[in-house]
Image 1 (cartoon, rainbow, N blue to C red):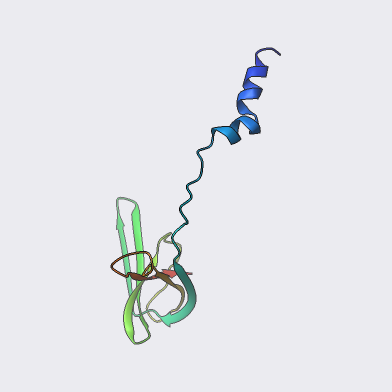
Image 2 (cartoon, rainbow, N blue to C red):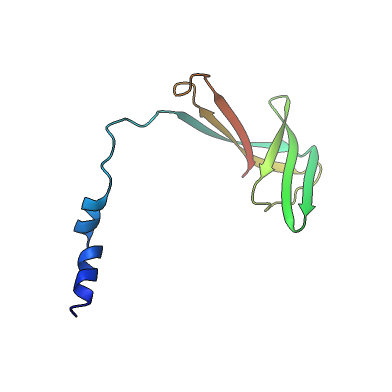
Length: 109
């Protein structure tokens, strides 16, 4: 029992609370995020396999422009003309970056 007592003290919540680094007074940067669900017809399929590794992406038209929809986990198998559901991710970093970046990303839902 004497062996376990130092171990219990070392792992106690009180000990862990005091060992944490103090948080800075600096406020986190504020960014704007928006997510939209969209659908489109697959116009082209990009599938690559190399030594067991895979990549799948789809070309669709979104608001009159061609975009690539990524299937990061390679969990889909859409063909030409299939209806694809995807997420449109908007990340506004213009308030926090001097170059005013606004990012747009498309991924399979």
